[in-house]
Every structure is written in structure tokens, then in C-alpha cells.
Length: 159
Image (cartoon, rainbow, N blue to C red; front, side):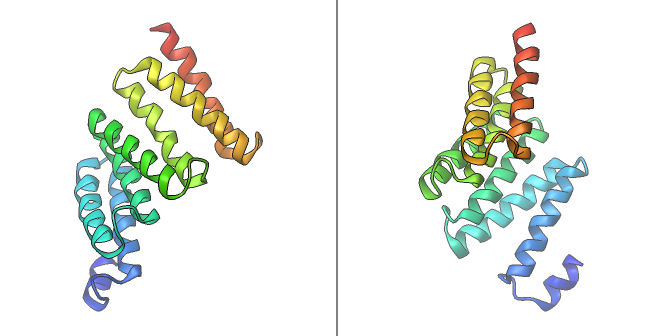
């Protein structure tokens, strides 16, 4: 499908950019994070050229690149990217915007993977508290963040 879209659509067409994003995400989900990273980097370069480095969609894609880096075992790169995205989204969208909080959900897992136990626990707690304050205690993301915090607390305190 992507090849057909590339053949008939302009390179900067929104549908084609969306298909490229889907392809990159699919590569990561299929256990091919290095291929996903390559695709995300190309897409981010185009997003930045078209919309700017701090465009909300560009930042979301950078967050997905961070997820791909974590999946590939590039924990330091994932931490750096998550921190960058969270910082920029907090400025562009505000700290309590749902996209900012969603991006921040990946940061503690990256800290955890990098062996930064105290940073991971503090971030898990902060994200869970902010999601609860912004979205409510019954919202699915809030519940998932609370579950993440509980699991990390048990796991990381045992180490």
C-alpha cells in the first residue's frame, strides 16, 4: 500500500506521511526496532522540514522514536529522546496536556531499563499523579500508570 501511495501522492502528502508513520510503528511492533528507527528518523526529518521541530505531531513521532530506541536496547538514546520530547511538549502544549503526559509515560520505563531506579520510581509516581489530576482516577491511562508504579515499586525495591 505504501508503495502505491508513494507512486501517486506527492512526497509531502498527509496521507503518505501517515502511512510512513504506520510503517515505522509496525516495524517496531514486529520486533524490528532498528528498521523502525531508520524509518522514524526519515519521517522526523520530513516533519521538521514541513512543520518544524516543535510541531505537536513532530514531537509525538519523536516520542515514538524514543520507544523504538528503548525496544532496540538503546536505553541512553531512549532516555535522552524521552526527556527532550517531554521538555519540548511541556513548553509547546503545556505540562498537563494529554500528549505530554503520554510521552512522559515512556520516560520512567527508559530510566528503569537504564538502571536509574530512583529516577524511574520518581517519574512513575509523578506521571501517575499528573494523569490522575488531569484525567481522573478512572481513566484507563491513569489506571495503567498506577499499575506501572506499583509494579516498578515492587520490582525495583527488591533489587
